Amino acid sequence: MIEQEIKAITAELPKDVKLVAVSKFHPEEAIMEAYEAGQRIFGESHVQELQRKHEHLPKDIEWHFIGHLQTNKVKYLAPYVSLIHAVDSPRLLAEISKQGERCGRRIPCLLQLHVAQEETKFGFLPEEADEFLREGDWREMKGAQIKGIMCMASLTDNEVQVAQEFERAQRFFTHARDTYFKDDPDFCECSWGMSDDYKIALRHGTTMVRIGSKIFGQRQY
Ligand SMILES: *Cc1c(COP(=O)(O)O)cnc(C)c1O
Image (cartoon, rainbow, N blue to C red; front, top):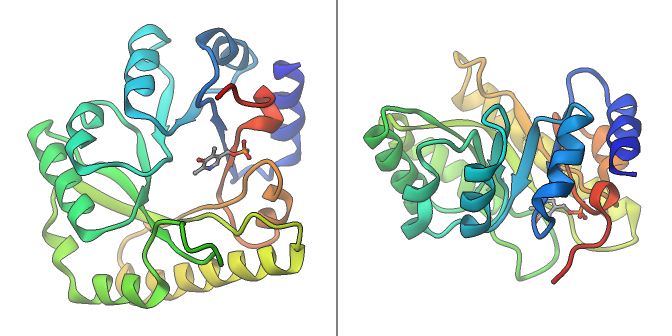
């Protein structure tokens, strides 16, 4: 089941779009099934759970942290995390940089853009992200590297609305790339699209889909 889903989704994705298999709340055996099917990138959103899985599971897994990250927990992930998707404040980026330097790394990060209607979603509004990039403190943060933009669309069946939100994120990505990252080819990632909306995301510039329940089934809460 997991193997078939991984293979079916992978076959559907263009070659330059990566699959992040979101394994939060799923047991290590489920991750190993996906691993045996060839999957190497996994997304988690709780620090303790990721710590445990990272310790037990194969070392060639790329662990992405996709959830809201508290600054006081960055230090636990800093030695090994491959990508932090949801950087939602200047303070968090500064802490990631500090911990990255401490580990002798430049930790890859995405800025989370708030494009959804929901009040509760974290992230920079496009104008806030623009201001932050324009001010430029991030250029001095040697332990963190901004590699692109991440967003979550509203939880709605309205596909037009979801498409508009992804388009907004895509426009911001293009603007940021052309304005602040002209000489930086590493600024190239767009992380959007989940189980219910990744097909829409594929039409709106995503380079990284984060898919959980479609692969692993419903999560156990
Ligand atoms: C849980 C989660 C996903 C995966 O959601 P599914 O609907 O299960 O595919 C993707 N992105 C983030 C940030 C998540 O927290």
